[in-house]
Length: 150
Image 1 (tube, rainbow, N blue to C red):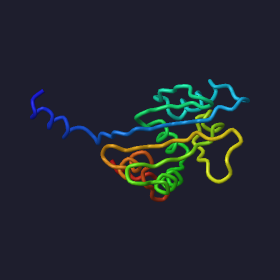
Image 2: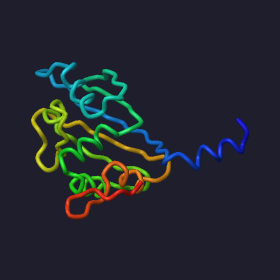
Image 3: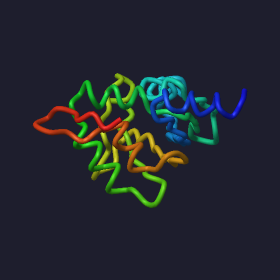
Image 4: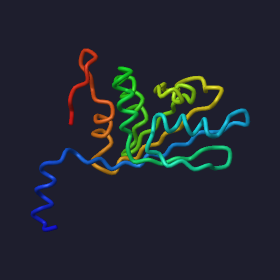
C-alpha cells in the first residue's frame, strides 16, 4: 500500500480501539469448569480461555458483547460509574457476578463477595485512551438514552 492509500482509509474509518482485556475467575471444587467458562464466554464471546490452577484465565481484545448487554439492560450509567471509579491512567477494572454472567446478564459485583466468586476483569486501553473507550463501551446518557459519542 502507498502512504496516500493509508490516509484515505483512516479518514473513512471510525475510531479503532486497541485494548487488552484480562479476565480471571476462580473455579471452586463445587463448580464445573466448563460452566465457569460458559459464564465468561456469555459476556466475552471472543475470549481465549485457558485453565489455570484453581481458576480460568482469559484474554480478549474487545468488549462489544458487554457493551451490547449494558445497552440492552439499560445500565450504562451504572457501568460508567464502575469504570470511572477504578480508572487509573490507561486501565480500569471491574468484577461481574458469575451466575448472572452465565445467563448473559451483566451484574456488577460490589460490596459483599458472591459465594461463587466473581469474574475479575482488567482492561488496558492502548488506543486511543481509556476515557474514549469507556465512552464507546458505555456512552453517557441523557434522560436514560445513550448519547452518540463515536
